[in-house]
Image 1: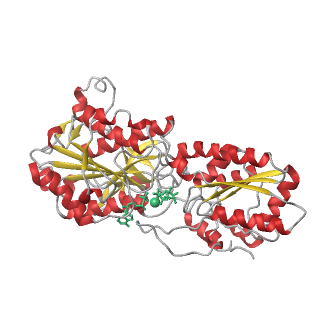
Image 2: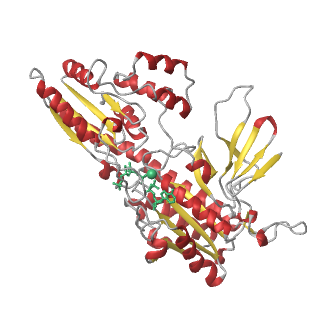
Image 3: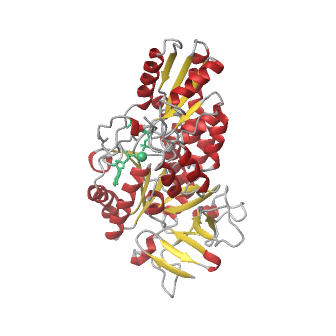
Length: 494
Ligand SMILES: Nc1ncnc2c1ncn2[C@@H]1O[C@H](COP(=O)(O)OP(=O)(O)O)[C@@H](O)[C@H]1O
Ligand SMILES: O=P(O)(O)OC[C@H]1O[C@](O)(COP(=O)(O)O)[C@@H](O)[C@@H]1O
Ligand SMILES: [Mg+2]
C-alpha cells in the first residue's frame, strides 16, 4: 500500500483502486505518543469499555483497525474501489487516561433540532464509557472560549436537555479568533495540570472551517488536543454525509406549515398558500417537505432557477392550477430565485450573505399580477415557519442519530484521532477529515432522479428552455459540475 500524509489527511492507496482518506492522529505529531520499535503500544491504555458490563458481552464491539466505509455505493464491475473513510467506533486501545482529560464542547451557527441531544450524549459517553468527568461547556459559540464563562457539564445537568430545543450552552455567529481560542484551550487545560484536551465542535460549514483552522493551529503548537467536529446543518448543505441531524425533524415540522397553507388555500376562492422553508444554497428541506406532503403544487429551490412571467413561467402555471383545482400550495426555499431580486451585499457576523425574503417578494408579485387581471382575483397567505422549525427538539429518529454521532466522536477522540468529524456515510458511521467536509456545499442535483421524482409529483414546469433540455439529457447525472453546466443556461426569462 502507498501512503501520503499532510496536515489534513493521510491517503492510503491499496490494490484495485482502493483509497482510504484517513483522519489525522495525535501520534502523527506528538512525539511522546509515537510508537517505537520496542514498545509500540507505549502511551496507550486499554479501552475502559473492555470492563464495562454493558459492552463487555458484545461480540466484536471494538472496531477493527482496517474497517473502512466506501464513499460511493454504486459501482460497476470494472470501476476502481474508490475512496473510503475510516469506520467510526471504539478502539481496543485509547490514547487518553480518563483522569487526564479535559473536554470542551462548543455549539456555533444557527439553531438546529438535536443540538442538546448531541451535547448530552458527549457528556454521558465521556463519563459513563470512559470515566472522563471534566467537561466544560463553552458559552455562546466561538467567542465564548475567550470572552465568557464556562459551564461544568455533568450527566445530571444534561439528563433532560434532549427534550428541549436550542442549545443549553448558547450559540453565535462571528467571533472566531484562532489565536485566542487556542490560547484559551492551552491555558484552561494543557498548561495547568499537563492535561490532555479534547475539543468537541458542533456546527455547520462555517463552524467546521473554523474547527479546521483551530486544529491546524493546535498541531503547529504541538498540543495534545484532539479536535472533533459534529456536523450540524438544518439545510443539509454539508457534503459527503448522508444527511445532517435535525434535517428529518425539520422536514417533519415543515409539514405543519404546509398543512396550514393548504387549509387556508383550500378554504378560499383561488386560494394560494405559500410556505418559505430554510435552505440558503441547498433546497433539500423544501424538496423533501414537498415530496412528503403531496399537497404542494410547486417547489422552488436555489438550484433550479425559475421565472415568473411568460410562457412556461410561474404565473402561467399558477393560473392553470387555480383553474383546475381552485387553489394551490407553493413551497419556496429561502435561497431560491435570489438572482431575480435586487441584492444588497450585506453579510451576517459570520460572513454569510444576507438574503432577501424571496417568499414575500414572490407573494407580492403574484398579488400584483392577478390584481391586473381582474378576471381572477386571488387570496394569498404567506407562512414563514423558519424559527418555529429551528427551535423545536429533535424527533425520535434524529435523537438516535445525534446519539450515535456523539458517541462516534467520543470514541474517535479517545482513540487519539483529531481533525475529523463523525458522520454517516452510506448508513455507516465514519470519521471524515475536515477538508473533505468543508471543500464544497451539498446541493440538490437537478439532473438526478430525486428532483425528477419531485417534478413528476407536483407536475410543475421545470422552467427549462429547449436548449437546456438537450444539456440535461446529454449530461451525466450526479456531479456538481454538471449542475453548474446546466444552470449556466437557465437564465431567468423576462
Ligand atoms: N472561514 C471561516 N474560518 C473560521 N471561522 C469561520 C469561518 N466561517 C465561519 N466561521 C465561524 O464559524 C461560526 C459559525 O459559522 P456560521 O456560518 O454562522 O454557521 P454554520 O457553522 O452553522 O454554517 C462563527 O463563529 C464564524 O465566525
Ligand atoms: O437568522 P439567522 O440566525 O441568521 O439564521 C438564518 C439561517 O440559519 C439557517 O437556518 C441555518 O444556518 P446555518 O446552519 O448555516 O447556521 C439558514 O437556513 C438560515 O438562512
Ligand atoms: Mg452555514
